Length: 121
Length: 234
Image (cartoon, rainbow over all chains, first blue to last red):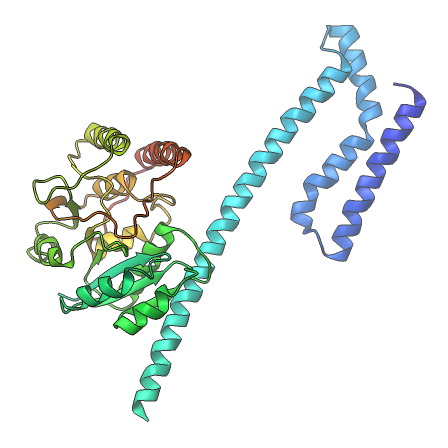
C-alpha cells in the first residue's frame, strides 16, 4: 500500500466518521444504532495500519495475503451486520404489530362507548 | 356459555355480510377482525350486525386472530370459535364444535374436513403438504386429520396461550396444535362440512408460496418443539 493509497483510505474513513457524527448531532441517527457505523468508520480509517499488521502476519506465519484477509473480514462483518439488521427488523415488526392491535382494540372500545352514550340520550 | 364467533378477514366484502348474518342466527356474539382491508369489509360487517375491530394496516392472519382473542379475553368470553370470512365454513357446525368444550371433554376443538362429513376436494400438492404436517404431529403422538383447518374452537385458557409471544407468528397450523398439546390442553377433532371458497381465493396459491409455507411451518414447528414446554394455567 503506497502512501497515497493510505491517505485516500484515511480521508474516506474520516469522511464517513464525519457523516455519522453529523447524523447523530442532527438527530437522524440514534446513538445506539450509530455505534456500529462509528466502528466501521474507525476500522476504515485504521485500514493502512491493519494492512501493515496483515502483511507482517502474512510474511511471518504465512497467513492469506493482506487483501484477502481484509476482504474476508469485511464479508464476515457484512454477514453479521445483516443478521443484526434482520433481528432488529423482526423486533420492529413485532412492536408495530402490538401497537396496531392495541390501537384497533382501543378504537373499537371508543366506538362502543360512544354508541352507548348516544343510546342514553 | 358465553361464546364469541371470531371471523378474521381481509378484503372479504363479497362474502362477509352473509357470513355474519348466518353466524348471528346462532345467537352468539360475532366479532369481525378486519385486517386492514382496502374494500368495504368493515362497513358491511357492521351493517350486518357484527362487532368490528379494524387493524390500521394489514398484519396477517395470526395478528388478526390474536386481536380477536385479546378482545374476547378482555370482554370475559369463556370460549371462542374462529371461522373464515370467505364463507367456507358452515355456522351450523358451531353447536357440534362447542359441545366438547361445553361438556369439558376438550379445550381445543378442530373442525376436520376429512372425518367423513361432506366431500371436500383438496388439490394434490396440498394433500402432500397435509400428509407432511400430519406426520410431523404424529412424531409427537398427536393424531390430527386436518392440521390446516381454519375452523377451530378454543376455551379461554387456550386463547390466553394463543395471545402469548410463544404463538407462531406466520401460519398458526400444525405448530399451534403442537404448542397447545405441549401445554397440556386436550385437543379433539370433529367432522364438519366445508365448502370451496366462494371468492375463489386460496391462501396457498401460486408457485413459490406453498414452498414458503412449508419451510416456514417446518421451521416454526421445530422452534415450538425445541422451546421449553408452556404449562397451562390451573
